[in-house]
Amino acid sequence: MANLKQQAGIAAANLVQNGMKIGLGTGSTVFFALERLAERRKTENLKFSGVSTSFSTTLLCRKMGIELIDCGSVSHLDLAIDGADEIDPKLNLIKGRGAAHLLEKIVASLADKFIIVADSAKKVQHLGEKFPVPLEILPAALGLAQTRVKKLGGTLEVRMAGTCKDGPTISDSGNIIADANFGLIKEPATLGKELDSIPGLAGHGLFIDLAKEAFIAGEAGVEHISL
Image (cartoon, rainbow, N blue to C red; front, side, top):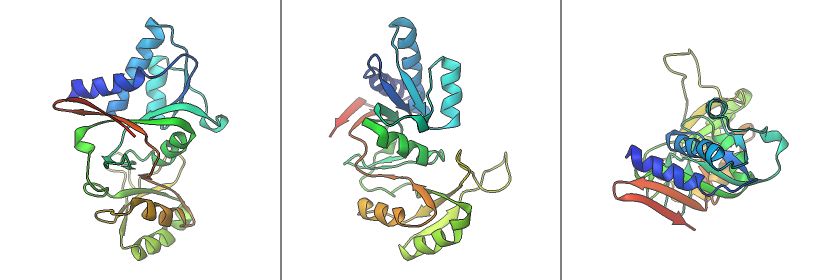
């Protein structure tokens, strides 16, 4: 599977053309796309600049010699490449297990084309089958978010940082990361709008009608989906 994930990442990276500004996502399959872009930069003299969606991706780009520009200085990207935690048949997504979904959504929204690279285990019939919906919440809005999520039929749990740090997981933007479990999400667009309306909720992990293309690695090879 690792080799197929590499093929998926390479296929997406091969779409980058000279002079493009591209969004660079986070995750194991995106890593292979970064490797391929760094290789093309050396062997083809490919000139491009990237916008990173997380500090971990920024560190990889620095190591690989990929030029980065600040997201806040950009009003348009030619394309963005990123992974996903769940992918439904319409290429609606749940993202955010890496706690980078707010910046990832900003970058995806800037791009003319948003491309997903992932493995087949991420495919689901309905979002919510395997994972809750990650939320990024201003600390002052945590109580409000808990109340609103409950009214929407969900349960909210603050994500803890784990063994390396006491306390909650904090995003690169300094906000609290929490996970909202709604079970199977039959109407993701409706739920996304409800979550968008919660004051102090900076971003959620439902990516609706953003991805238009995907390269998905499976046992039989790399599946190319284009809407």
